[in-house]
Length: 493
Image (cartoon, rainbow, N blue to C red; front, side, top):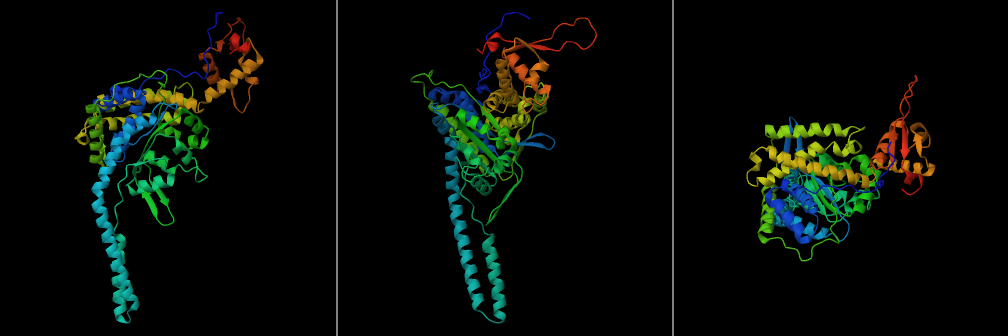
């Protein structure tokens, strides 16, 4: 083995993460994201990731993608962007979601007349039923029976009259119970959009004292949701919940400590973006967003949202044969990476197992954004699928770092434990058996559990694996040994 050692790389060092591929978005959307990032001097990743949640708010529950056979993917997404304070998250959030609130306002204005008419009709029907019941209660003899029958009939008619709810697209940091009720009122479709991370505390039970994540689990997958309240029953055949959040990195660290989130699979449903902060390097007096670019973004998002708002049954988007081949190739590339041993994504398998479906969802959103007026009758093209896969790869790279940040990477935690044992024993070289003997069986049950941690330390330059040459004698080959970086032995690394 060579004598020279390079400076070890800290285990906590964050790798260089890719930037969001803005070119993968339709031009009107990518142009606005780039211009808004310039105006606010923020990473374009934040704008672009939130743009996907904006599209998912418009299309979620209203558009699905047929991957193949009976495999259908809805187009709602859970997206979270993590940036430290002073990164103008609120300003970006307001600009990105503004057209959704405008669309919600227009929908409410359009529905106002129908709601008033329905309320008045039901009120009059109930009054007629009450009067009939009063007449029946004071009647006697044969007349009473006919009046009772009439009162029952009128009461049933009044009960069947429903008042349409005020249209809602968006909710903020609402309780799970409120989110469930709002979704049920809105036909199973809703978006939770917030520039803060309080929703995670609410899910964890800030107000109720107990975690309640059922609606957030089923709302992502589209699984049937039935909730029995004291005064009513809420049922959604295919709920479609979208989430778009901009939070501080510390929020991710905190939720990573809640094993209930990870155990139930909630964390595996989010797409994570962890862009690099520009604070301290921002341009003073940047160019504002051109009016034409802003107007086109607002017009297109509003039009897309309004065109899909009244869609009762979702449009089913098909893939062209070539687009299907693109997605199949992505699936073939991802599958080996899911292996628990040696797979790049194996330690985040719950998350990565949804990556192919995520690419299909993103492709559906890019398709409707690129074909605002007639996309529902056209299949998804291979170029769109290729762009969606590029975005999915971006989220995969960021997810690996985010899960490390949340402490979900067991290899990272075990590598830290292993490094502490190496420091404490000040070995120059140690056999695998002697090293394993110094470790806790609760954290390292078998020698196989040692290997990923050793590989990570070797990757960061803290040790080197060395197999001594055979002596020529019979018997087992020499066991591998580990050469330890001098700085570790001296307590300097």
